[in-house]
Image 1 (cartoon, rainbow, N blue to C red):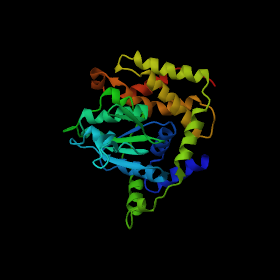
Image 2: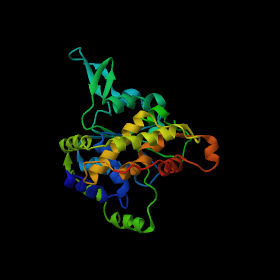
Image 3: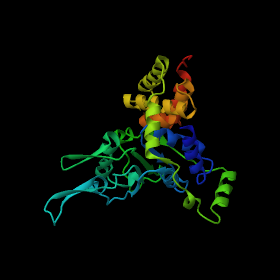
Image 4: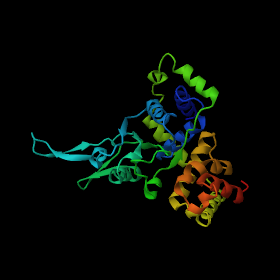
Length: 309
């Protein structure tokens, strides 16, 4: 599977300049069967990155542009009567695809946002009491703008916790932006992208990641980090057990991408911020002292004893 990982990274890098870390994080989430929230200012390539990942995989892809008038049935689907046969038929919603781009997810009301919850957690949707499994692999990649909040509906903590990882792209450097201008000056490199792997290869990679070895010391290390967040005076909400499980899975995938079949503390440390930062809530008084989730988690990483493997 090593060659497939490199092919995916190289394919996306044809379009995305200088975003190797974010690309690795997307692949890690994909191999962990997790969902990703991409949060950043407009125009830095959030949608382009998701589109490039979907294009690199031989998987079905749907983009949902979330607006206030999008209904839950638009997401999950609905049952209608076939006028010819008189029988009820299920009409699939936009979520019944392998790769889903939920663009500007915070611009749609909570009722529609929650329509994604069952699909993200259970890999199925329920319509009129009947459940329909989503195709596999299944991944939701949602985007939102963290700056503009007028006319938006912030994601509640319960839904944020469903996202395996939150990543940010950031602005490019001057050299990277010049490279972007050069690449897009005559043609759009997205038009030349083609799939480099299949859904079966992704499912196989997910199975291999689950088999990566995590020692008892790594379990203890992850638990210590999570417990520290629950006892941190600057936090109103610490990491849930789901967060600990996600950190373990991400650490396994990080080791897998590095070509190892076992997790080391460095894997855990690199995954703490993207996996846990959106799962904690900073107290208002801590924010007044210029503290944020990333800074608090970085302090916790420095404070927790690193096990010797």
